Amino acid sequence: PDPGVLAALRARQHDVVTVAQLLGAGADRAWIHRQVAAGHWRRLHLGVLVTHSGPVAWASRGRAALLSAGAGAVLSHASAAYLHGWAPAPSRIEVLIPHGRRPRTRTDVTIRRRREAPVVRRVRGLAVTAAPDTVLDLVAGAGGDDDALGWVCAAVRAGTPPGAVVARAASRQRLARRGL
Image (cartoon, one colour):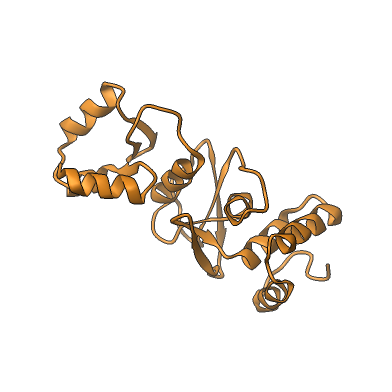
C-alpha cells in the first residue's frame, strides 16, 4: 500500500483502518492477512483492524466501533460523556445509528437507534453527540431521578450551558423524564 496514505489514515483514525481503506490505498488481501497472521495488527471488528500489536486505546476502540457501525454512526451516552470530559471511560462503547439501520452486533459495543438526528460534534477527531443530546440520553436511561440529576450536574459543572439542554429538550418529540 501507499505508505503515505496508510500513515495519514493511522494518524487520523487513532491507528484503526478498514480493509476497504487498505484496499483503496493499494494493499492486497494477502498482505493484510500477513499483517494480522504475524501479530503486527489485530482485528477489532469484521473488516476493521488496529495497526499495531499493543494495548488498544479507548479512542481506537471508539473509532473502530464507528467504522464498523457505518455511515451516520456517532458515539453517544456514556461514551460521549467521557469524550466531553464529565464521565470516566466506559468499558463498553455506545454508538447511536440512524433508525432503520441494522449493523452486525458486537460484544463490546452497544448499538442504539434514534429516529431524530442528533446534533453531532467532533471531539478528539471522533463523531459524538453534542453535550445537550448526551445529557438527555443519559437522563432518559438513568436508573432513577437522583442518577438523572447527577448526569445533569456533571455536564453543567463541565461547562454545558443549562439553557442549551433545555432548548434541546424542547426540540425532542419523545423524551423520558421531561418534567425533571
